Length: 312
Image (cartoon, rainbow, N blue to C red; front, side, top):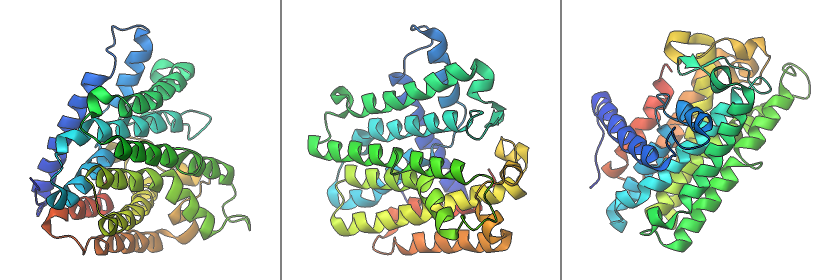
């Protein structure tokens, strides 16, 4: 049954409900801390259950619901797959925080994995989370109700979005561009590439995965793809803005580091006001992509507004 979201309070209930169900699914699948190697499993769980919003898997669920009115698919069949998206996302955060990457000491208000467990343990915990995601995706005990061809498309979608043509590629170009702000080698095109791949690729994929699991027709899948692309870019633009205007108590991590490291961000390249306008323009474009849907897509609309207006 599709739920409609009309107020901030209803959205918070929606997010909290699905976050709890996703966490329950992950809790049941991930090895317990008593399983050998115990410290590795402790490190995996430390980062995975650090209080994340679960925006990416919830976007997949909302996309599933948006096409569900026509297909009649059961949302329960999608839970193990969308939960695996969070494993991929968490692995990326663990590795991004490493000294060789963004060198962050805090994430979500507490010490990052490498600060808590050491760099080697953090690297291996990230590796284990990523591989656990694809083990979970291909575990037919969990996904037996999903047609094999559909599941294969979903696994390919996530693998491509997470790799060198997606998230990892965006992170690589981001690191290569560090310190080059203001030079002739840095362009708005490079900036857009970094944001569209480093952050946008997995958000786009999450939306598409939900649509694919729900059996979306081509027109619906195309509209949701545009929604995911625009929202993915908006998400990172807002992140860039929060690094300038946010506080550590709000964001749960160090702020001001992008400027200090001369990282490629929208405010640094385009200016703060232009960045804010860009975030709202992208949100508007994402909402316009949903005009083919009725109230069944209200959760997606509410999440888009939440992402652009958030403070953390």
